[in-house]
Length: 545
Ligand code: N01
Image (cartoon, rainbow, N blue to C red):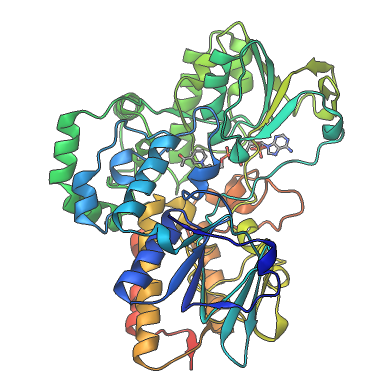
């Protein structure tokens, strides 16, 4: 049974003291708790806003929500028993199965007793004299600890566009990242979906099957690769279990934490026929691995164009109406310069009689009316509006915690021109605060569990070393942070990633957000080696006392 947050009586109570406070009970918070409690013997607590564990997967329950990484490697790698006991049912796990997995792990390691559910952190303040973080919660309860670790996820702050008239809408509206647990009954309903990112591309075909009518409001056309989802066979499970060491070795050795290698050959080094054959095979195999077809899809614009053109031709093959196919074809960015979605029947959905595509660049949304959505051309009558409009990614979940560091420095102000971190792990003026998969680390460019484990292991080793040396305070230096921020930009600029002007990697999806490329694009293996080297050097670039 998890710790339950006490309510009114807790107001103004003395702080509950811990060795470490972890915010968030998803993949990262749970593993961090295990490491600090079971390896270091610390009195650690996880504070979780929701009434269950799961983090991102607790909230993302929209129709079609499943993982785009394959199940056999979208999981922890630190525990052999868990590896051997758990088996996935599908190539891409659906959201309930991921929550089931996390509950299985939490129960197996007896983690829930140190998780305080229904505990929303509203602020965190550092005391320079004592080197202590004090965390306040929505109910007024106070927690304190020398170490504060944010495990709040990268895609956990919903981006709900401020659309004129939304409050007048007489139907129901939902954001995909805050989906009602009881589900939404689409039967007989006219549904409008705004957004065609990874989420919208997963949701649209499922909603189209259930609803009377679906109107998809598209701002930017997107590429998508078929997922080719299917059941995991007993043979698959056996093979995975027997080969886990090699699977993890491959995942950690690569760029994106996936257990496959990117082809060594350039897309421009082969004949047209050979290239077409390679892309066709990758298309048939499905999934994110498509972008590993050639070495330079994300490095060379001409190489990228070959992949983009292949995928554009596929849209025209699948979608029967040439005018709709043309509207669905992206021309403003190259394939994979934005996070590439994978789908189960997305383009096919536009062949259905009950699905309509509206290009809101050609006819912008003017307002939400009591009866639906009015564009510059006409009103679309709707019973339900689904906002698949993404997240205030990476920085949103951190800035919203109201973090106040050394000498009253506010994270919100320090990051007003974009996030400034050293290794994505710490920021100057915020001593003893560690961020798991924060901006400036590979995070969202990576298979998340691999990125999470690397960060949790590094943070745990750092705290272990500090305790062994009698050190009480660690803070990223300004100089090392400036250099790291410059290196993050340099790594992004060595790829085609910054070219997608509407990418959430750049913060472009949130009006007013600074345009800064946030994740580290230098590759997971390279990043992990840098972190290891910093640790071995005695934490170069940090001040310890
Ligand atoms: O969000 P997005 P998402 N008016 O930002 C549009 C991960 N994920 O939730 O492109 C009209 O990608 C916006 O248009 P534009 C994955 O990393 C993982 O789909 O900005 N439209 C876009 O079409 C993914 O990348 C899994 O012009 C507006 C869409 O809404 C990330 O989550 C599964 C708008 C938002 O797309 C985010 O994906 C699903 C406005 N005001 C997602 N504002 C897994 O497999 C935004 N849009 C684990």
